[in-house]
Length: 439
Image (cartoon, rainbow, N blue to C red; front, side, top):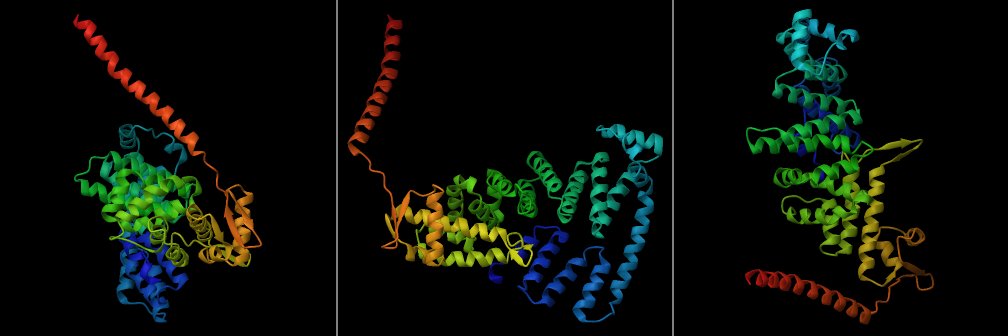
């Protein structure tokens, strides 16, 4: 299933620290050779300060306790830089670690800067040192400390560009700590800035939206309200345009969210339209399943794609989240997707057939005959289906409501007569009023 792996496309739009969870997932699923994953991790770590972690991976990859001299030198360099930044940021860090002093800060940034300068001799240089210190902590993998310092830095920073950069860092740190509620708040805060800020070019704003959508996947597929969140965000015109312009692979996640979200079935028509528009730029089993079913009415094709959809979900870092319950491992999104996808096939098939062979339907739903019969019975009992099962012939008979065509024609004529009367009235009355005024 490597052909459907989006890790390379996703990694290009993520902070390198956010790529590690994806690689961990791929390593667990054994989609690639272990050596390839370890080498990819080392390449990522070369751009961070997590030297000890890189050393451990090097030892594991090469089966040795020795590490290259450049790694040893890099470690010494990181420790020296950390010591220097620690000293530079010490005055403001000491201030921030005192809860009583922190309470003296106000929403007014200018007041805070003046107060810090006057009473504690903390000036712009120390505030800038706090940003560098927080960033360094993030690169070292201390996400909790980085998040705290970046939050405090934004309360003091007057440089809008630096403030936005700190917000991106804070968002990444909260994602990596799996603080989904706080991460969602930071995501919404960042979205508001991106949508309202005057960017140097539309292309720059477009890129920020693409970054935001990629980072949002961590939140939306873990937060309890994430399935609504991704639909609300991705279907906004500006973000949907960004997907169609330069991030068509995000359609996989939007399509999955629509399929598993029963309350948002109204978005299906719009989704199908976008999938059709982008079919030459991007397609995978999930988008092709919807196209087979709702565009081509190809039930055999939809059945084949559904089998592939299961594998795509199982091997996707965002969709294939596993939950261990005792001795059982479940993939909730996979189960929900298959259940809803079968319902889609069933509903669509029932719209164009009145008498359906249950055995044939079971085949299309990738179920056994007994499973399909039980599934249909449950649908009927829950009032989702107006039909009955004929156990003798093994068929499902759809109940059709008899329509009185004569009454429909009479009702239509009444409506037409009323509309004609109102139209004539709206034309005649102004004309008569104009004539009287002319006299």
